[in-house]
Amino acid sequence: MTPRRVAVTGLGMASPLGATAAASFDALLAGRSGLRLYTPPEAQRPVAIPAGVCADFDAAAALGKARAGTLDRFTQLGLAAGLEAWRDAGLPEAAQEARDDWGVAWGTGAGGAHTYERALRELYVAGKERLAPLSVPQGMHNACAAHLSISLGLGGSSATYSVACASGSMAIGEAFRRVREGRAPVMIAGGSESPLAYGFIRAWLALQVLAPGDEGTAPSACRPFQRVRAGLVLAEGAAAMVLEDRERAERRGARIYAEVTGYGESSDHGNLVRPSAEGQARALRAALADAKLAPEALDYVNAHATGTREGDAVEVAALAAVLGERARSVAVSSTKSALGHPLGAAGAIEAAITVLALHHGALPATLGRPEDLDDDCAGVAHVIGEPRRDAGSRAALSNSFAFGGTNTVLVFARAD
Amino acid sequence: MMDTAAAYEFVKERLGVDARATDGATELASLGVDSLSLLELMFEIEEKFGVKVDEDTPPPKTCGELVALIERLAAGAA
Image (cartoon, rainbow over all chains, first blue to last red; front, side):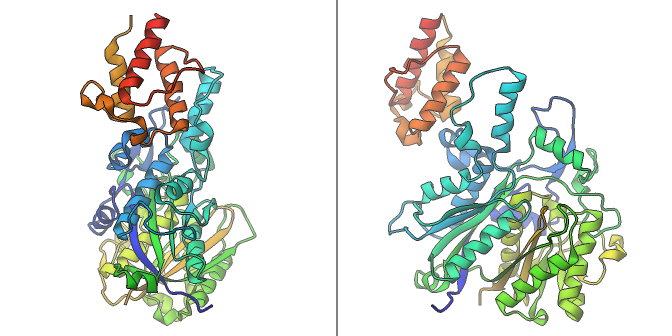
């Protein structure tokens, strides 16, 4: 079968910068930071960390109180983003056609962390014997995918990928393959994460990779590629995109934001948490080959760069190794500087941002100052401080590199 | 004797429906409350009001019936 072209026809997002994709992207281009000092309300002992909280997101308004009350926050965020993407694509929620081969591919790293932590508090702290009946179906990792399938009447594949920070990216990549191979005419794909639960925060603090900050410095706590970078900033959020057979999308007159043209993956097979330039380079090469894209035709990379000392430099080294001379002129930015790191949702949010960047001809910047760029992150054309208006950008990558050594790279092309 | 306002407040807080007004007739199913989420609601009522919902209790169909059930259970517990 001839490979199908895969169009992005709908986008949805809930992020620390806004409750919709448009609001989030506008705030990103305006150079706003969505990060602030956060204390989980259920904290047993005082703790405050810089974090990305979806403060504008109103679950009851987006989903109705009755439905929102039965969902973990990662599902609230993801379902709302998914429904926004669906509406944005101009597809009705109620099935007006057979959707037996339509599906959902979703990513989450932590799943129902809030549900499980609440249950454990009841058992171990409050000493109760009985838990809420929905504890299992609310907490399970595939809850969000299931609710999307149920809400949209999707009768085909319903899969959840839990690959730490590459979860959302892998979900989009696998959905892309399914549409390209003609196995599904429409897929909704993305990821959601809400890791800001007390126990989860304590676990991340123990790993000693979180950026420090106080009330005043929290908004600028995540500084990818810069000398002052001191770690990542945890965040919550979700993004969804509707992937559709391009011919089908054109037949129904749908707006096409961009095309997914390639997907590459690799495993470092080295260390659980230390990144590997060689491993990342393999995923980058696989993605470019899949998209049949020469390095000279690449314009923008939305980097994984989380703001850790080692990770950012390794990613630049991988880009330089794969792109060669072209690396010096490829625009690179890390939007985690404004959104933080929503773990399993990061790949989905950043893929959606990459699509919007191509669609609007506007490349969002890494927050910070050019003079603060670190020498060990030199070698690419950093977009830092100010977004770059570049209507000529035609092809872009979205990188996701996960704990566990899984690397995923998505390739997008402008719609025309 | 329980404060009957608490039952209305629970339904409003949990389902977004003011059962004191005409919304009392709002069917739970129309709010997306299925058998599983009704089980969750009954659990929350037991926890919040310190009551026990018998297994043979007929499931409420509307917001008004849900309020009446809470009031009846709470009156029995008092």
